[in-house]
Image (cartoon, rainbow, N blue to C red; front, side, top):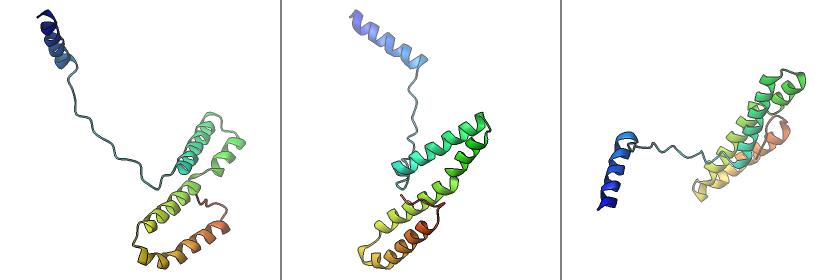
Length: 115
């Protein structure tokens, strides 16, 4: 009897002082943000923090090296590859040339990184 009374009082106490609240479920990461791209983004953020703490030419050069252009290019190319892979198999030969052209342009551009 005392245990039941204690449990009900404790439950009422929790309901008053710590009511349950709805939790908003956040969306999942985009499928084209692979682990490689996320690690590139982490490296860029670390380089930016280092640049803020000490504005040296070496830190500035490191930040420029892993700049936003590399990340954007990698995200764009991986997004294109995922999108094309989800298309109908009959349409893939059309896009095969497009992917080959993207990869060849990527190899000619040093600022663009293909994951």
